Length: 53
Image 1: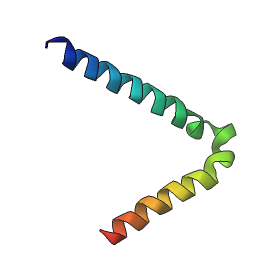
Image 2 (image 1 turned 180 degrees about the vertical axis):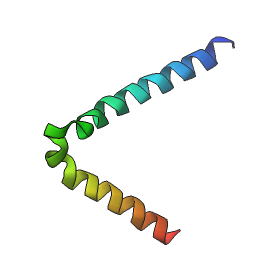
Image 3 (image 1 turned 60 degrees about the horizontal axis):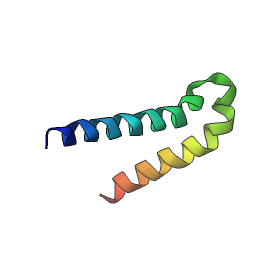
Image 4 (image 1 turned 135 degrees about the vertical axis):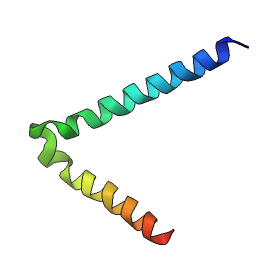
């Protein structure tokens, strides 16, 4: 029973690492132009869902 929270935190850390490596190129200037369209889509989707709620 005591190992389950550790496993959960490890899985959360792995998920954070994966998402960090996915979003890391966005913050580098060379990839900024490439990801601008994707960023616009994501931000637009977030704003749209916020307007619905």
